[in-house]
Length: 455
Image (cartoon, rainbow, N blue to C red):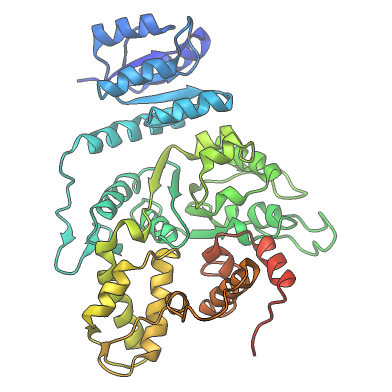
C-alpha cells in the first residue's frame, strides 16, 4: 500500500513541484491544502501517513498551529521553510517536527527527509526499544557493524538506536551535547555503520582552526592564490570525497564561511581558494556543544544553515544524567590504563565508587577518562582506594585558609585544566574544549593571568 503524503503549502508552484517529486517515486499525494482549514479537512478525510507543512499559510492560522494538531494525533510532519523571523523559528521548533526542508526543494533532500521522518516516527512509537544486541553483563552495546560504546544507560541505548537508524542513510546528522560526552565517538559509529565505511572519515575541529586559514583547510587552494600559497593544496572536503566529513564544533564557523558551507550542503560543490567549483560526494556529520537555536535567535548562526544541518539531530546526554554508567566507564578506563602501565588493578573501594557517582563531571566522559589515567599511575595496589580528583580536593581544603578572589580561582582552574591535558590548549581533549571556551579567548586569559607552563 502506498504511503499517503499531505502537502500543506500556499504557494502553488512550490507545492506542485513537491507533488511531482513524490508522484515520480510512488508516494500517494492527497489533494494539496493551502490553509489551516483545508489542511484539517484533508487530515480528517485522507488520514495521511506524513505531512509536509509550510510555516506560513493562507488565513490567520499558521503551519505552527496545524503542527500542534498533528502532534496531538501523533502524525509525523516536516516543515517546509524559507528564512523565518526568530519568533516564528522558535515557535516552530517547539512543536518538535521530524525535520526541516529548506526552499527551493531538491528531490534527494525531500526523499531523505521523508525516509528519516517515517523511520524516526516508528522508533518514537515503540514503547520498548529494541535492544536485543545489548550485552547486559558487560554493558557493551554493539551494532551489526561492530562499533562499540560502553553503556548500560537507557538514555544512551536510545542514542545507539538512533545511530543504527541514521547510519546506513545519506542523511546529514547533527550531534548535540556538552564537551566530552562522546560526540566524535558517535560520529565514528555513524560512519562505520554507513555504506561509506570503506572510504575515509575526515575529522575537522572548526574551533581549532584559525579564521585566516579555515577556508583553505576546508576547501583547499590553488598555487599562487594568496601570499604563501607556494603549491596547490587539497582541502578536507576533497579528502573526504566518497566518504564522510565530521565537522566538530560547527557553531564556531565564522559567518562568511557559513555561507560557503551552505552551498556545499545545497549543491554538493566546493570552490578552492583561487580555483573553480568542483563537485564532491561526501556525507556530512556535524557536532556542537552550543545551543544552535539560541545562536540562530541571536543572529550568530544562519537559520537556513541550521535547517539544512538539523535534519536528524542526535543528543548525547551529559554523564551526570546517566550516573549508572559511571562505575561501568570507570572500570573500563582503569583497566585500559592499568594494562598500558603493566599494573594489575581489579577495582575500586566502595567509598571511591560513591565519590565517583556523587561528582557532577563537568568535563563528562573525557574528564572521567583523564582521571582514570591519573589514577592508574598513582594507585599502588590492586584496589583504588582514593579519589584522585584535584577539583574535589580543592573543595575539601581547610576552611581556615584565606578565601581567594574570583580572578585567583579562575587562574587556578585554568592551570588545573591545562595540567590535566598536559598543557594542550586547543584540539580534541585540549583545555579550550574542556573549559568550553574559544581558543583565542583562552589564550587571552592565559596571557592576562600570567599563566606559564611549569617546566
